[in-house]
Amino acid sequence: MNISQICQGDIAIRRANKADVASLLNICRRSFPYDILYQGVRWHRENWWQVAIISEAADTYVIERDSRIVAFALLVKNEDMWNKERKKRHNLFVVRFLSRIVCPMLAAAEIHRKLKNLLSGTEKYLLKPSVKRSYHRTWLELLAVLPEERGQGIAKRLIQECESLTKAMGREAIELMVSSTNLPAIKWYEKMGYEKIATSSEYEFYVKVLNSTLA
Image 1 (cartoon, rainbow, N blue to C red):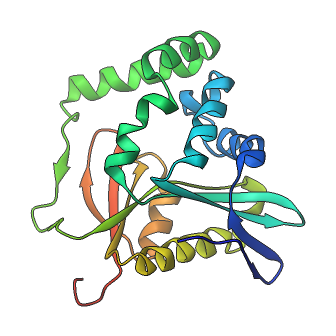
Image 2: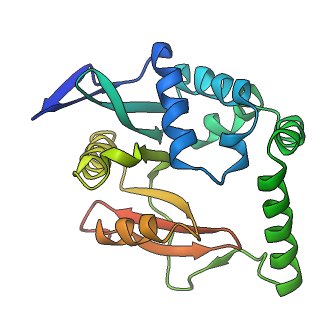
């Protein structure tokens, strides 16, 4: 599914291209201030976006306002291909090592969190017994809006666009994960009709079944 440009009021939704990498990286760094992968080695995430944008496994859509990118969503269409391309996007061991040097405070917080989870026995991934994950889905890898642009319905327009694209591809649902500490995002996804289906020590997993006959 390809989108050239869709204008809705004072904003435009379009497919991202390589010229957008700096803007996408800026949104990530401002939206995820405590994530060491975004606050650490800059060239890593630049390379990550360069590879992600041209991948046939996923589509990235941006929202522009006054010729300025203010939000984006990355929708994975082919998870097998996306996972196989993982090494092209980054080397996690090297990146995390270098990022810990660049961001020692975030590194210390990450280690403390993992030790706490390990000692408390909350490292397990728990799936709700009532959930049947037999649907044909897309995966929302990332969705972010600049802090000063939030509360204006921009994220809602993006998620609705992703849902429309998912339906157009003949898929039945969208699944995503969100940090368990990101309470505003969790509340927002639930408001948008997403249901929690699983949890781990650091993330909550949500799904929205788009075909009412399968819900």
